[in-house]
Figure 1 (cartoon, one colour):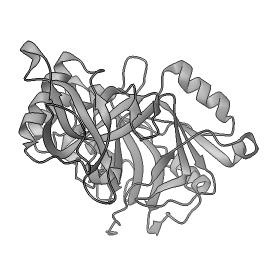
Figure 2 (cartoon, one colour):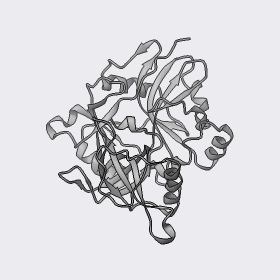
Figure 3 (spheres, one colour):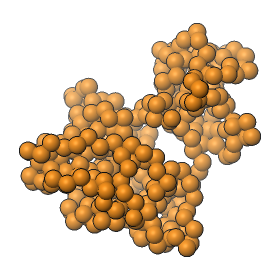
Length: 320
């Protein structure tokens, strides 16, 4: 049996559509709103799923157990995204969150799989048979991936469109998807690298942030967060303060966040420069969230931020 290499997923850089003169140099894929996953198929009937962090998440998704047999004895390493689809066929991260973090409980994972089925979308192949394909151009890897015929009720290989970036972006906007990923057709696969060869174009501005503190709500909501204090990892250590966010969550999300904040409470401010915020309560900088915002101030603050979701699939080190 071939020993499969561990390959960290290649990451896309936020940006804009390539200029029209370069349009046909790129392939465009719908940006999925789910959990990144590298799939290891040794060719012996087994399967292993690893999250972007490298954590083994195989037990959390029992519906993918039969993936180990789809390529027969051919060993492979595939790159993709796990999603929980809504009624319109779009990835819904809030639905998927109920499936994440269950790798330690097979029984609970099986129960949740029946309630909220997951779907795995493949978009790259980085190892096949005996060959690493990371030095193979994207267009050739894509042709190999499509030749594998990976389609079914629980997994699929969505289409990639060459050129027509403006039309593709408008289609995703109309259909309610998050955006596009533009991939240069000559690009090699760069494990663990956030590369300019892959560009993610979102319809709204979003930012992954680390929660460094919070402000209590008022009155009967004093035990719940009225606002979260956000940061980004600072090269010199600690967090660089980027503002506070106090809107966008449901009552259930705010209650869930309160439990996480109380568990992470500390007396030490985790920000490189202490924010001038009265009544702040500090937490260990381990919770990662995603917020939407309109623009940045000259001081680097996020303007009009709104909470979007917790990111249990990321750690603060992933933001460096």
